[in-house]
Image 1: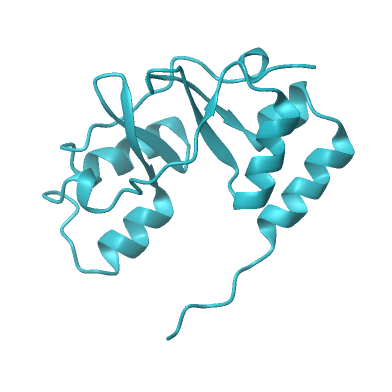
Image 2 (image 1 turned 30 degrees about the horizontal axis):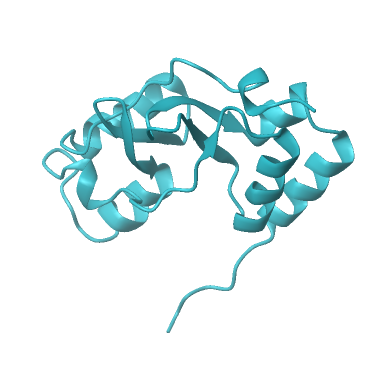
Length: 145
């Protein structure tokens, strides 16, 4: 059975908690991605998505040029280990409705990122990936409470 290390992307660009939201958005634009890991040194401390920037930043009236990433990032991060079986990671991605998962070593140091596309291209069977995409893409009810 293939492991995460066989398909993950290595040498991932990151931001720090002290970087500005504007700098993070510029990096996302440069890389054409919607998520970047947030690290202190090599230690993963969070993830920042374009949705975090929009909802926790812009919609909340925060100034992107002065707001640190730490104020809008998701600090509780699901991650996997590079020696985990692909099918286990795919199941977790499906269950938690995420498309990308950071990959860490046993000291929580970031070593890569794995996406649903990586799993589709190079590892998991097509039916499993299709089912995961369907589950991940199921919209949640609006939180209008």
